[in-house]
Length: 75
Image (cartoon, rainbow, N blue to C red; front, side, top):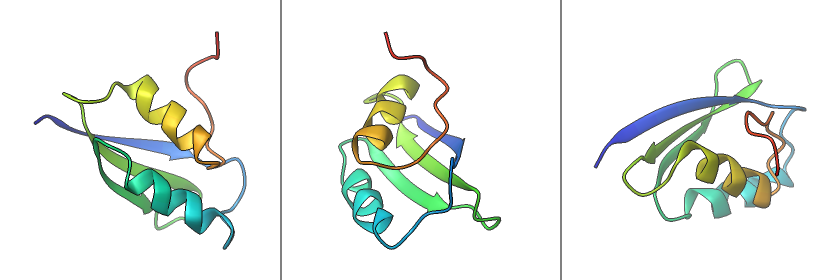
């Protein structure tokens, strides 16, 4: 297992409604940890790089409705 940690800036502050998305993303295969940064302006995501790529992580976060700033363009 290769653990990688990424920080994704948020496009807006998280709301109570976003809590379900965080919970669902946390249960996603390969995610180890998802935390709101102490500054409340980004998410820290730890994942298993032997199971997911950085683009997979980003796509999952967006799919679960989390307002992250994307690093990868949608093709």
